[in-house]
Image (cartoon, rainbow, N blue to C red; front, side):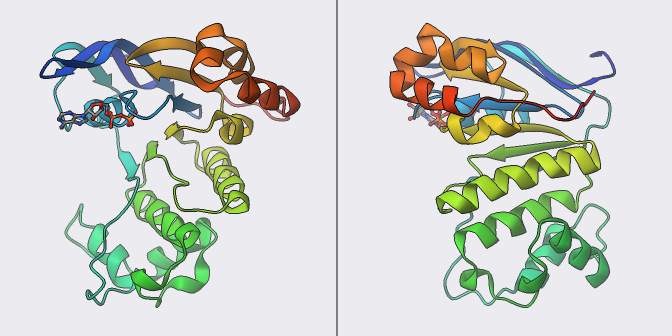
Length: 245
Ligand code: ADP
């Protein structure tokens, strides 16, 4: 059983697909009210790591411990919606809320959309949403589960740059308001660092981890992402004007 402040902890996870070693002794912890970001190039094993943490695939070695009855809200990287399926946001969110086989009431759905800053899309068909709106709706769906831990896989894909920054701000706000732990996958540390307490740089193994500024200067991080990213990040130092934990 992990200590009370730890929501989820992975110890020494290893996993191969055939001859391809995708995770090599990866360990990570997410505490209450902390935002942990996993960065790494394509193919680094980020999505595989999330799947192991969510219990969707078994590692070859290592283990995952979760706090008792941990509720996880998951925001997937993308959602394939058939263009011919007539589904409004409201109906989609009603369908998603199935834990007690009771559809969420309109009030609850409207409150969740308000919380993610998308109050006007209730009756919009899913196909009519912009990239940023769709991500907010997926976030609202995750919040309907009343999670203690929010897990997001590249939440800003398909969203323009301003929208990306707004979305990360929103995630940080939700952490503050709801006291959530957040685990987030990104390939862009520069954008997420304002909102991140801890970064884990993954490339099969954990190259480095810690505070974003320290990670951005780590030789393995610089080797993976190039010196320009490290320099850009130095222009955007990460300062907390508030406390958590
Ligand atoms: P990332 O999310 O960092 O881009 P992934 O975890 O998706 O990385 O993938 C890591 C590696 O594992 C990639 O080389 C990918 O092609 C491979 N891979 C992912 N899923 C499978 C699978 N189900 N079967 C075989 N190889 C896979």
